[in-house]
Length: 214
Ligand SMILES: C[S@@+](CC[C@H](N)C(=O)[O-])C[C@H]1O[C@@H](n2cnc3c(N)ncnc32)[C@H](O)[C@@H]1O
Image (tube, rainbow, N blue to C red; front, side, top):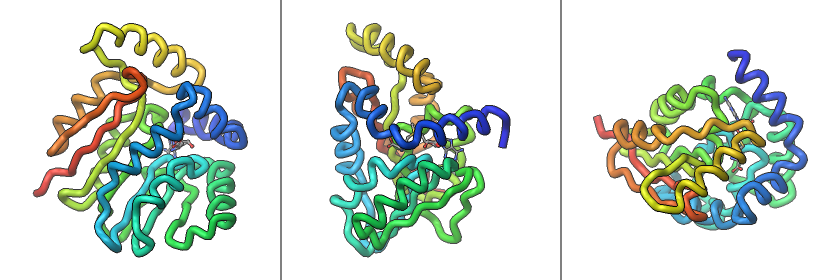
C-alpha cells in the first residue's frame, strides 16, 4: 500500500464513527437521496453479485437491499477496520443474511467469479489513483457487467457549474478527496452504454455504465 493510501486509511478509521453525519452535512442533507438514486439504478440479475468498493459504514447498502432480492450476494470492501466494524454491526442489527463485509485494500480483492455490478459510492475520488481504481473495478466485472459510480466531479456545461464546482473544491479540502473532471471522460472511453445524470445542482454525478463485451 503506498503512503497516500496509508494516510487515507488512518483518516477514515478516525472518521468512521461520525461518517454518516459528515456525509449528510457534506451532501447538503441529500445523502439519503443519493443512496436511493444509486439503488434505483442497480440492475442485478436474480442470484447475482454486487460489490461495493470503499463501502465505508455500509451507508448505501440499506437502499440497495430494498431494490434487490435476497438471492443476490452483496459484498462490501473497505480497508478501514473501524468502518467495517460499523458495517458489521448494521448487518447484525438488521439481519442482512446475503451481505458480507471484508476489511482489505480493494486492490487485493480478487473474487473467484465475475461480478455483475460494481459500485463506487462517494468513494472513487477518495482513492489517490482513480485510474487504477477504475481498472480494478473493470477487472472484477463480468463482460457486460454494470459499473455504478456516484461522486463529485467538476462539470463545465451549465451556468451554475462554477458555483457547484466551488462547493466541490471546498468540500474536497475538508474530506481530502480529489475531484477531477476528466474521470468522467476516462470512464466513458473505457466502457459501453455510458449514461450520466447530474444531481444536487451538479455537486454530484451518477454514472451508470457497462464493461465492454470482449
Ligand atoms: C467517502 S467514503 C465512502 C463511504 C460509503 N461508500 C458511502 O456511501 O458513503 C470512502 C471509503 O473508501 C474507503 N477506501 C479508500 N481507499 C480504499 C482502498 N484502497 N481499499 C478499500 N477501501 C478504501 C475508505 O476507507 C472510506 O471508507
